[in-house]
Length: 257
Ligand SMILES: C[S@@+](CC[C@H](N)C(=O)[O-])C[C@H]1O[C@@H](n2cnc3c(N)ncnc32)[C@H](O)[C@@H]1O
Image (tube, rainbow, N blue to C red; front, side, top):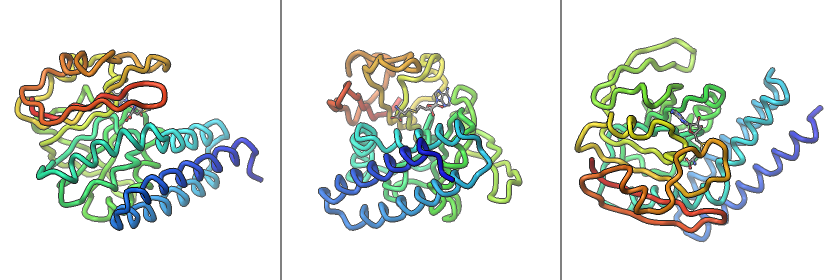
């Protein structure tokens, strides 16, 4: 039998999916609506898999909450700010490290010709399976998307060797040189200066942070767009923006180191 707390979470996720659908309907782009159908199908399948898994109730609730939070209105507005910039401009991302990319919930909305491969790196090993289940349609296209459990401070941003898992669980080592580094979770990094200094010059950086100090793990907030720009020290900024969200401001900066 499904527990009531679990049912509540699943209902909330469906409400968030409905909100995402109405956001996309207002944008009126057929391509995005088709992608929504894929995302929705994958998320519903994932919910079913979590429910039927051997995880205990706390572990299940953690995963449900992660899916729900990743679909929040604030997340939708923030992620589509970047997606729109990339899709609407003459810009090619090449190989991408999506640092601290969580569930990779909105990756599907990047136009596929805008990048070669996106590797999502997140240190939370509990979410890897969901990230790869949600993005399975990209994985089966010659690994347009993959997820790696790692601390982003340990990556080599010049020329990396990554151990990735195939669907059958076997491991393969690949060489990976990122052209673009995305990090929409800069407020979460405790060693931000070390991390930003480890990225070589001329890489394209797509970064977001916020001024929301109400979460314990927001240990590197910026109180303004100007403060965020000072921290990231880009040589050439091609886009910057402040979005007013329900409870905070979200800062986006895109440019070259
Ligand atoms: C909970 S999400 C928050 C989402 C973020 N505000 C956004 O809009 O993308 C933050 C993620 O960053 C990950 N994270 C934090 N520090 C990290 C690090 N040093 N290396 C890899 N992942 C990290 C956490 O595991 C978590 O999944």
